[in-house]
Length: 101
Image (cartoon, rainbow, N blue to C red; front, side):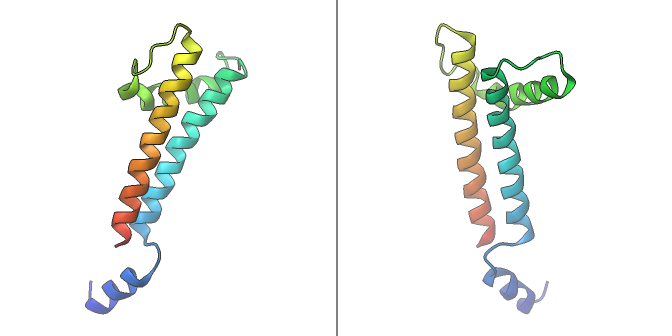
C-alpha cells in the first residue's frame, strides 16, 4: 500500500476493517437482544429459528454464565445476556475505533 493510499484511508471516518468489526459487533448484540426478547415473549422454542437464535445467544453469552445468579432462570438469562451484550458492544466499539486510526 502506498503512502497516498494510507493517507486516504486514514482520512476517512471508517475503513473496511473498522466497518466489518462494527457490523459483527452489532450482529452479536442483536442476537443477544433478540434472544432476550424471545424468552420474554415466551416464544415457541421448538421453532427452528427461535431455537437457532437462543442456541447462538447461549454460545455467545457462555463466558458470562453465572455472573449473576438470581433465583429465576429468566432473570439470570436477562442479567447475564445484558452484561454480555454490553461487554461485546464496548470491546467491539473500541476495536472499531482503534482500527480507524
